[in-house]
Image (cartoon, rainbow, N blue to C red; front, side, top):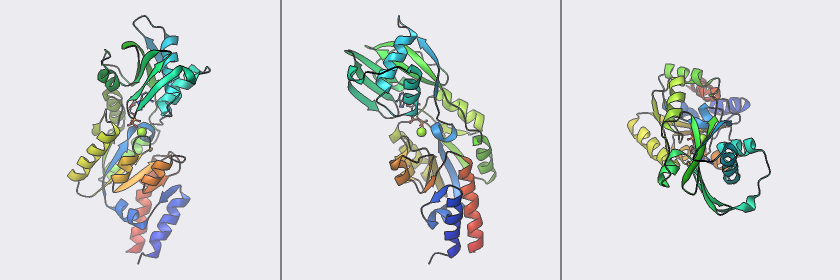
Length: 284
Ligand code: ADP
Ligand code: MG
């Protein structure tokens, strides 16, 4: 039988916006060895904004933004939303054909008869588009007919409490790891600012699963995953404790998670661990 106070732990947590799907996850949170975080939307706000547009090869800023916005209007990735918002004008979607979205990389389409590729460095390389490699921050490249038309620099902000949460977990002897589909530069920048020593970048959704399994194999104790559910529902599913943040409205993430945090406050992860430990103390 399940001790009554496990239920009160779940009740207490739910009043604090932390929905725990079973008392076994309260137990699991008490014996955490490692917490693996997704970067975008989890450690950062995930509220992207276009901060600069760099045209090249004879294209101008307007061309670059317009091509990107036409293609991105078919995606609901936060990066896509920021580009469409920056463009701000009416988009005639009938001008876009043969659209393909490649999860964790970007999109390819035909716009008014021209092949347009919008996405990260990986996607450009795979399609034989020549690009400069050392760029900092999150960058969206735009290629037209195989030639780089330019790139769009997107800025995101680290959440105000992320650093404190990482430090607090480390104090509890819990290791912290970051996984991201973003590039080396943004990964280094965010991990550096937060003091996360172990991080992996340029990961496709299936690479995140593989990397997570590797971490699980090397860890004695439970491994939690914290993500926002965009491109990371598969990892939420295979973790000992899968925590989805700010995911309301994203059915796949809510379904895959063991714990759902109803807002996007990262400190709720630490609070969930504290409530669990407190609850177990009462039970024993
Ligand atoms: P994270 O792992 O940090 O949460 P994602 O897996 O959602 O990031 O995306 C990884 C990377 O794929 C992004 O940083 C971006 O470079 C690229 N990407 C994904 N979707 C798009 C899109 N719609 N437009 C442009 N780039 C995209
Ligand atoms: Mg994400």
